[in-house]
Length: 138
Image 1 (cartoon, rainbow, N blue to C red):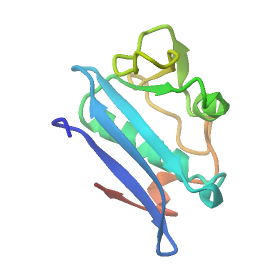
Image 2 (image 1 turned 45 degrees about the horizontal axis):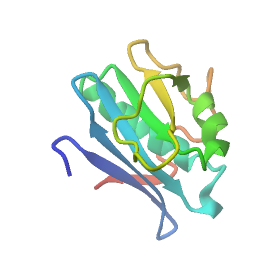
Image 3 (image 1 turned 120 degrees about the vertical axis):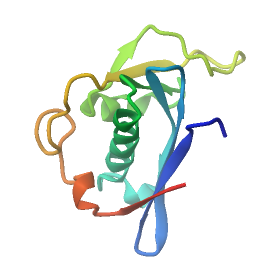
Image 4 (image 1 turned 135 degrees about the vertical axis):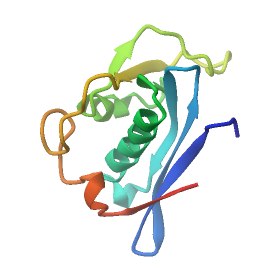
């Protein structure tokens, strides 16, 4: 792993429900990668909580934005990221595989404060501050 890289696991009921990774990409960007949740954990806020944890790491590390790439084979997740405040950009993805279709790159600026969970875009039942699932740094 690169210096400053890490990840989180979401656990509940004695099993891992989801995971996410992150890595620094330059001085101002933290890249979110490999977000995954078990099918039975979807729509419960697990993915949202994991993304919020990465955003918290980015803020605490002084990064101005979080970047992620969505495979052309997984475009159904775009509305999820839109609800969390991510927007599509034409910025290239430095880690794209040259033999695969170019991914959709999304960015969220962290320079303005996020609305509290439950207000504005992306609010809902899972407030990471209440820890409905435990997250452990890996």
